[in-house]
Length: 125
Figure 1: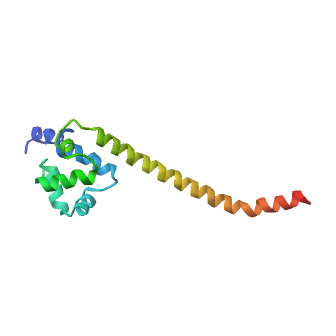
Figure 2 (figure 1 turned 90 degrees about the horizontal axis):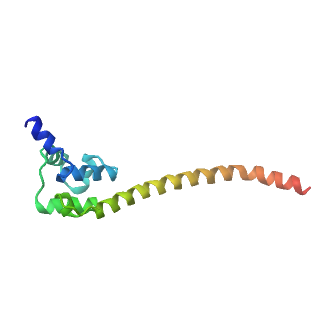
């Protein structure tokens, strides 16, 4: 395959050009994605490298797993589902980070509780 073919295969409007960022947004490697879908990593790697659309049932499963329509992965204009899904994934990541921060704060407050109780007792006397 020549360099021109390789550049064309990296077009963002191809099936895999649209699927790869979604796989990444789901925090999956190509291997994890393949295993989740029940495909061999080698098969998925070949599809991506050669920019081949899998058979219809596999393509539909890929779209469903990524939370988009098959139409979108095939180059359709319906991006709304994808953009909403990506925002949802980012929101969940942010919520998880906030939850971790809140848990750390709670741990720190529990460690400070005996000190606060001690000062409360001293100020009563």
